[in-house]
Structures are given as C-alpha cells and as structure tokens.
Length: 361
Ligand SMILES: *Cc1c(COP(=O)(O)O)cnc(C)c1O
Image 1 (cartoon, rainbow, N blue to C red):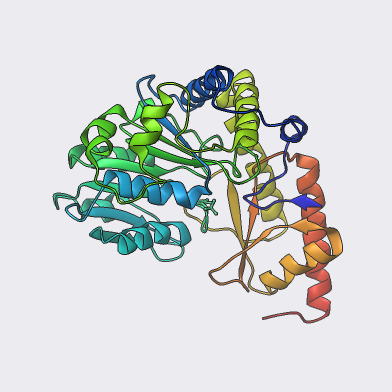
Image 2 (cartoon, rainbow, N blue to C red):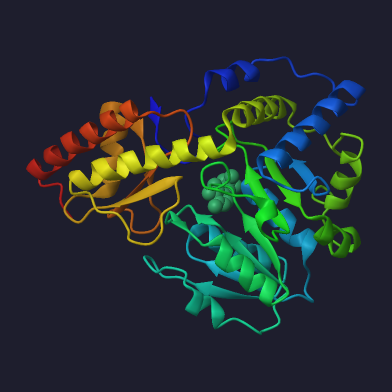
C-alpha cells in the first residue's frame, strides 16, 4: 500500500515506533514537563512568539476550526470568509450553525484570489478574516502577505486554517499578524489523525477568548490556556499522539523547518514535471506544496483512482467536486522521487488501458 493522499499520509518509522509506547498517567509532573516542552517546540517550529498560547485538542482539524470560531467570535461580529472550496465552506457552515454573521469571498473552481477581488471587501467593518491558507480541495495557496496586509489595513483579526500548509509551505507566524493558527496531526506532520492544535496570539486571547461567553464546555479555550500554564489540559489528552508530535517536532527542528519545506517543494515539483511530460493537465493558479490536482479530459478520473487502488494498492484523493475530471495527488509524509516514478508509470499504464477499453467520459 502506498498513500499519495493528503491525510492520513505515509508515516515515518520513528512515528510508528512512538505509537507503540505505553501511555503514561498524565496528571503527574513528568507529563506536565513533557507537554510544556511540546508546546514550546510547536511554537518554535511555527516561528510563534513565546507569549502565544498553544491548545491541544483531541479532535480532527474541523473541531479546532469550530472551537476557534466560537471562542473568538459571536453574533455581534461580522466575519469575512475566503470560500474557495470544501474547507472554506466548513468555515461558512460553522458560522451558520453558531449564528455568527459573515460574508463570503466565493472563488469558483479555477479562480485565483487576487488583490482586486479582496480590496472590494475593504472598509466594510469586518471583525476578522477566516482563511484556509491552502484550500486543500483545489490545492490553491493563497497569498499570506496579501491577506495579512488587508487585515492590518482594516483592523481585522487574521484566523488561518494552516492544516495542510504548515510544514509544507513557508508559514512563519511572527512574520505576520496571525491571531489564530489551526493545525491537525494527519497532514504534513504525518501523524495519525486525532490531534488538533491551535496557536493563539496573546492579543486575541486577552481581547476575545478570555471574555468569550461560549456555550461549549469541552471546547472552552479559557480552560485549555489556564491548564497549559502548568503543562496540563482540562480533559484527557491524546497522550500517544502527543508522544508522536513531540518526536516529530524534534526531527523537524533538527532537519530545519526550511529544509523540510524545500524538500516538500522538490517532491511536488518533481511530480508536476513528470506529469507535464505525460500531458497531464494541472490548474494555473498558485499551487501549494501539499497537493497537486490533476485534470483529465479523456479518461474518467474517479475510475483512475479506483484502478490505482485495485491494481497497484496506490491511494490518491478522488475529488468531491467534478470527481470524473479531477483527482488529487499529495506530497506530504514519507515519500520519495522513486515513489512518484512508480505512480507516474502506474497512471500511464492505466490511462492507456482505459483508452483501449474506451473508459472515456
Ligand atoms: C484536512 C483539512 C481539514 C480538516 O479535516 P479533518 O477531517 O477534520 O481533520 C481542514 N482544513 C483543511 C484545509 C484541511 O486540509
């Protein structure tokens, strides 16, 4: 089995080894020291100021997205959401369900987020901007500089879902004014799913979270921030996943975050070059390093994904939107150029097979 999906991804041997460890009892000083260290490593890896707050949740990424929104905002706010696909739409649904007013910048498939589009929302008294910096469903990487300066000009908080982007594309919190960063374990960190993280600025904590009247008990960030001052979480944390996170962060910092990102870039570029040589089409908007959408006009992309699975045990992401035309190839986790050579060969084999069988659309 080989995973070219965007999450879960191929894990590293050191991560699997960590996963086999007996979980310790956590209400003890030893675990507190471990969690404080892990929090500091996470801030270091994201270039976040020391005074920022880290929150560890036992949930998938979406839980952290919802928790962030309900702890920072309420029905008296007006939010602006970049909605360029599936994950932008998650923010829209979170606001709807929690009755938080919002407007959307809707990007149709293939449409790029430009300064012109964004500037038409300037001066409209929004409280915050919510964005998935890599919209994983399309692979578009939005321009953090553009969004950051828009928010600064308009006095807005910047809330970033960096779930598929952190540690795959450059993401340095202290280079910008990012008030909340949302992460999840199963993407570039290449851990099993189940651990989500939020890094909050001290400013949004003081101005918003601390006085928030959220109705959620489990997702009340005040309790997480208070507990973290002594290296604890209010409820049982996913201890084993935290072992794997701590271990992964040490590996990443040793390798160098910039080196990790350039390695991911190299792999993505390697695949895209091979794909282009084989006449496989890709979108023209700026692509994140995490994932490449591939577009087919002469074969059925969903059937390609099934045949890769059934004949080669290779897994790629089918696409919710236009599944017969598009599938997505991930570049996260323990993959090498050799893996991409095998993938390209397999895709070519199946494509010619499908054309012979007239598996066309
Ligand atoms: C994967 C992903 C999520 C979270 O999905 P979960 O299934 O809840 O972990 C959210 N946003 C983006 C951009 C993602 O890539």
